[in-house]
Amino acid sequence: MSCFQLPDGICEDIDSMVRNYWWGERENKRKIHWKNWRTLCDPKWVGGMGFRSLKALLAKQGWRLISVPDSLVARILKAKYYPRTTFLQANVGSNPSFTWRSIFNARLLLEAGLR
Image (tube, rainbow, N blue to C red):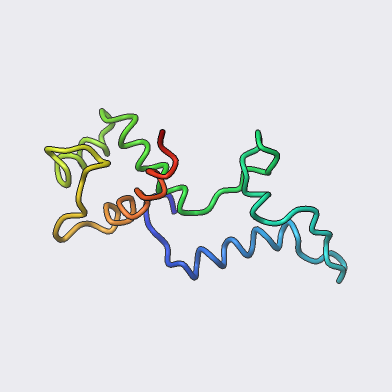
């Protein structure tokens, strides 16, 4: 899941399972919802639980392409998909692999968090 973009329906099902674990039923009684889901997804230093979306896993791979450019995966992807630019300036290209398309699609999420 950290290298391939899953369909939105599967991501929603997995998120639903996580929510049910925290808020589900116990002995046919619903658990108390102390905070809304968005608050639980906030970082721990803000007061949330630090839950992340599954797309954040792909954005993390993009971050590794930027922060560890000498890794084998980063060198291979750079040579094939963006030899003359950086990851943030790269295009999806023609006939990309599923891995590259997945990481590329998470780039918007990564850019939103960059400073």
